[in-house]
Length: 256
Image (spheres, rainbow, N blue to C red):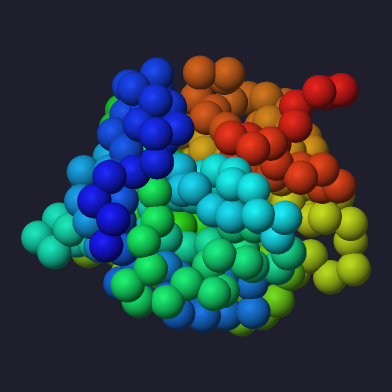
């Protein structure tokens, strides 16, 4: 395995205040129609804290290289393993890499990345978005100390994408999976109906919104209308319908 990451990875990591390393694919497994699990072996410190993500360098079909960011699902610090859940319901360079990844394949990884972390002062936590946020949602929720409450409202494209997880004993958990059916991928109505069907608890809460750009934007407005203050909502758009993510992995935010 190559020991040194690409020069561009080293330079970018220095600018971001992160670490660049070459990791090795330990395993690659299809979990559902839309979700593929890739376990990387190398250094678990790249995963940071729950809510953080990593940036990987992947090749395009044209032979160029771009970077894609993926939330961390799980960390095995003892073995140095970092588990990623990658959505593969599209044909972008990241999803192609995930489907083709084989044990022993090297990959440049930069981490940890991301600013959204668990609000430990909150009494309840609302995780809302689509399958691209599911890995981070579960990792964050599994770090909540009891007593506490985790609420999931997640839109899925296929019934098999309703993956579940185990949580700490004493943690109250509510899960709502919304079938997207034939709605457009940027249509927020499914998530908004899921949110409207749930009565937010009276104590202090915090919402974490991860997923498609337009849907996240609409849900932010709806949560404000429900009385949740701006400082109690954390959000990150992972992708945007009809536009490929930029070479650094972020969705196009022009024309908001």
